Length: 434
Ligand SMILES: [Zn+2]
Ligand SMILES: [Zn+2]
Image 1 (cartoon, protein in one colour):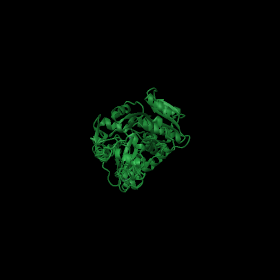
Image 2 (spheres, rainbow, N blue to C red; image 1 turned 60 degrees about the horizontal axis):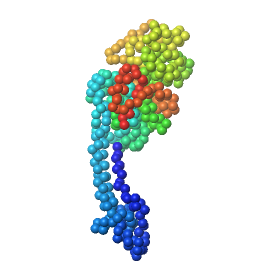
Image 3 (cartoon, protein in one colour; image 1 turned 180 degrees about the horizontal axis):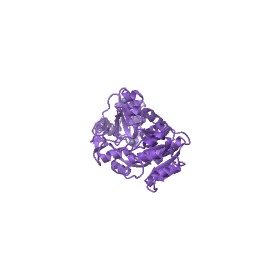
Image 4 (cartoon, rainbow, N blue to C red; image 1 turned 90 degrees about the vertical axis):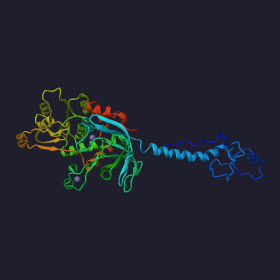
């Protein structure tokens, strides 16, 4: 935040000053010297230039009040601006702090310190997400957030400050950042399974005005966004990268029938990605508003599971009686995991993407898995590869973002926006912190 105060403007007549290039004997100049100030309008370096500013001269002081005032006013104003910046700007950064279950407070914190290889990003938009809603309800996250802490993880903004060792980014660049980066050294990273990294570094604090990006994330998962992509749209990068990871694991081929259980933000992204693969898509949910969004996301069949007797039977019928080629679970409920497996045909693939509560279990029919040669996969999170690909899809305009971002709210209304997710109103809300 910079404050620029206007310099005092000279009197109107000063703009039409008479140039002092007349001869020393010029009677007009002599007359003006008697009554007018000699300071130059353009450069106040003394009287050398002998421009007549035209201001009535106070002969005792030798200069006009404007010149005299400006000589002191400019340093005083500059000093005041610097002081205000110091007092106000670095310490007055707004951020949402999570204190416990359903206890989030907007507070003023200091600007995050920028260490070597790090980048300070001024957040322009952050999206609400089911994970954040869970974190808000539970008052933290066993792996990511221990309160009191900043939270929120889907965001885009402008580079504010770059520290030593950062070459790819400069202040003023539009950027989007995914919320983690793998170590690339552990057992799993060495086997190319970066989403399973034993030292996955997470970043939180998107519900704020600024966030500091750790060096590892700057190097692997921070990207410049093109002009055609808004900050809100770019903020979809992280959930899109997750969904892309899931869809690639499903090995969908053109003409496949795919069921997607859950039409929340991730389910809707799955619908769009399955359509891009050329699939026939069945979307199941129990919330009418979400199913409307599924329809807008171009799902071919909509099933409101609260209105049918047996959703598994309904989906099997819709796929010609055999079951679907691919079933994707995007709810995070063990009973829906089971149903998703039952909806798939022999030789089909099941992607279990929705994370269930810790300690929960589900049962599988061993006969069906064995004789049906089913592939059942759990998929979690994203990797730098999927983040890059997801950004490409956003830049290409392949994702219908209006189905996913259904509202906009200031940071002050974060709690309301999170409650909207909890009560299934709309899909994602963009939080605008400025
Ligand atoms: Zn998310
Ligand atoms: Zn690792």
